[in-house]
Length: 462
Image (cartoon, rainbow, N blue to C red):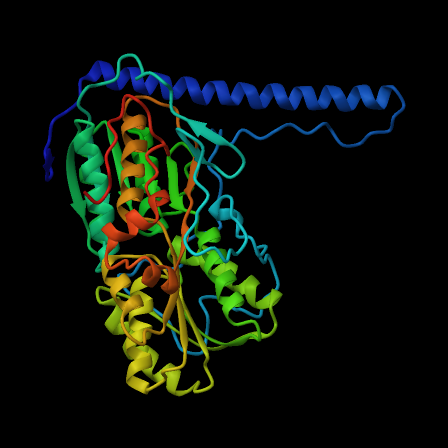
């Protein structure tokens, strides 16, 4: 059942039990850290006594699923406004800088990543009932945790925008929650950061079993996540690079996404080219893709940036197109365009058409039925995209929330793999919409990712 802003308090005994469990985890983790430190000191002392002269204590493997204190994220948001603008002369940050550059396989803020692939639509599926955390796999318990509720109360705090992606994501999440018997209170700020902060406060006050955060800015979300965790409410966050490692941060593998599409771009343009770069700064997934793009330019000097534009607003495509016209007119030698998500790609296509640049090859990120139509229409410049199925991603986040609400101790971070989808593949398979794409690429549906026998399986998009 889906409803808006309902207020049904959970039983106090269940809340106290969960708070005690979270306190125990923190105590257990602190104890593990103390034991590891003492062991390291003892090892070093023994080494010195035996005359080995070792000055470095033995290393211990990090625990990726828990942390005793929040880590500072490298994806800090640079703005808290409702519209992010970019000039045609500068990238989100200085592309000439060589400091702290990520490797070409992706930035550390996005988990594991794969190198650019030329495969037209294949992706690496995670192992059964598991999800990639970069260094390890996480599996939900085979049985539903003892004492878990039959019907969870979920608060979904969204920062959605215009575009099919958000609609598909929401439908997938709500379908999975409904199948699991949960009730959902939906709060959607629609690009209003102040409203999202207020919505989050309302969600906490409603005392849900778990809170899902879908998009937003770090500066807005971070303190609210802290408040929810302090109140004993588990939090699952999608695509906001939060600092509190007691919450689960889920995202697409944005480094891998950028590597896949840029790898294909390079394959299709072996002699290099001049790239119109279309992106905005201050949004975690776009910042991660930006880091990979910068490293791509450093590693491939035959590719240079001819211009930069992009605007994140309530009308991304049209506003980006307006900026793009002026930027492209100032860079008539552009041969390639790389847009960091699909609404930016749409704006790029509009701008290219308006200035009469019909030979530029466009490469994007994300996929929807509207995107498929644009990629397969006669004379389309949009050659490829790297993407997940948004409905499937929403369902994965929902399963994480069900598990968290039922008391499962989740990792602090997980990433969702993506596929490379080319124009040639879509035409070869006669794909005209997302339903057809799911049939052509069944690996886009990953029920095993955070799946369990006690969470009903759904088919996203149906």
